[in-house]
View 1 (cartoon, one colour):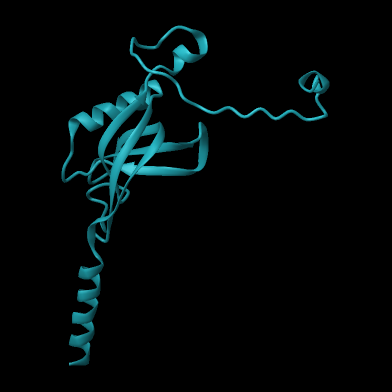
View 2 (cartoon, helix red, strand yellow; view 1 turned 180 degrees about the horizontal axis):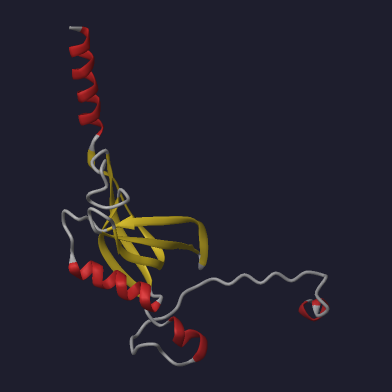
Length: 157
């Protein structure tokens, strides 16, 4: 009898702990890896270098495309973003407890939308665009001037 109660209690905890939309959010950055992987279940997996004020964050973001709802448009956008180095915003939802066997993907972060923020990084640096698109590069660059620099005095008059 006690064992049955423990089993029922454990099942209730597992089922109530599962959530399809445990969290929702978005991340901005550059896709550095995107590939189809897997031995038994093939899934699309990727890695985003998150940017904060124009600099790469030390916190990586790994994501998957949900095998239960694969969207070819999202896959194509992510593949192009990885190939051309586009800055993108990824909208995702995170699951808790529903991806035990990784049959939906290797992570619990599933991409639901991709928004391309900037395609012309090449134009900003060498004047020749990778593709003809419109937009601007918005970024922050920090310059540190120290007294060790021989040209130190010319910055302060």
